[in-house]
Length: 565
Image (tube, rainbow, N blue to C red; front, top):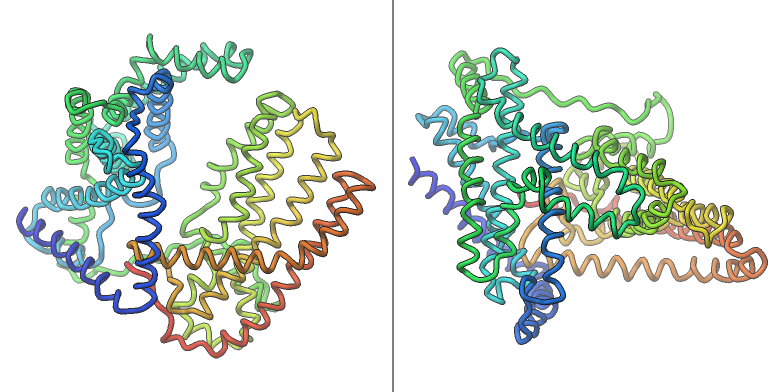
């Protein structure tokens, strides 16, 4: 069966490549391919060829050699954190996902479950190999001939991928019952728990010193402690996965790669020994098929964001629907994972020097979410345009449908940005150069401006889906490849250009008021100017929504391009 699975994998890769070559007959993909190739050459290959004339190596540069121990210690701590969190907060995704075709053809076939698991594990490594090659190209290691970077990253990410699969299988085995779980299922959990106790105990002993020392000295204390003693011993398995990436020369690479390769084989063996979930699913599928009782999976019930009344605005109902869709990639548990550490940091470091240092970083995060969040949150027309034929049957106007579609991502991104700004404000108490009134004014200014900028970008993005339905990918997936990357770069540049054009009138009106009030009241005087800017930009967005609504009513559902699976 190994030859059959290899043939299937190679044919899948070839068919995908042939599909992408065929779509180059369409002008939008040819233009996107040209833009993507120009970008890769001008900003990556050209720069790396120039840098290749000036040899540079992390391990031989005298100014950067001292930071290698810090990379090893901090990288190992990061890997330990991922390994521990995988047990405490497991992913909601299944460890291994089978496509409907694989379930339909492979499960009833005379194929051993172990062979099927081998096939899925090896198939998953294709993505790791491709990602490593892309990262090596962008980092310059591929053109410079540094074999340690692609080999080291392959060992690192392959081991991490297998570990997460093993955690998923083992947790499924343990959830079946303490007595029914095999004894070997407890070994990985016991190893991770023992390592975590050593690491947490070492940090507990260092905590008084870390709290009293400045940030730089505390950082050096963590690095020095991580190079010797119990903490170093606990971090050694994780450091073994990082060392090959930093190897210098072929000899040092092979010398440092064998411990990482051993860890890769151990995790592979662990996954093969803990495939209880796969065996159970296969046996259940076979029994249901034999008895004719196979039924479709029950739909996942997601909690509604708010109670929807029998009467009200259609926009609220559409936004209610799109907010429920957020549960596909986010949940209250996800929000707790992200926001809880920030809130704890705010309360612990509020008023301290450490908190003042973290405030600008969180402020930058709020700005990042404001500017790039609309490209990541897509529960609007970019997701629903594939169902345009159904949307046109609703008794609502085009402008009403458009507004309802953008309200959900606006509300979601605005709430996240406001939460980040609140934590930033709490951490900024240690900034002595700003008074309380000035800090409150800056936070209020950002809170007023952010929703308008988010709304304007979402109107542009959703408007592009209506005006250029063949250029913007829709649905839950997106096209991939250099041509798709170039196409998305063109749309990103066009969005920024239109946003700048839209901001100019609102900014010009608010700048005059802001200049006068700043001379009279200082920073607090900028808040009314921010409110005026936001109101003007929202008015522009409302006008564009009204115009695009009529275009949406005339859009042909057949012109919409679905995403690539």
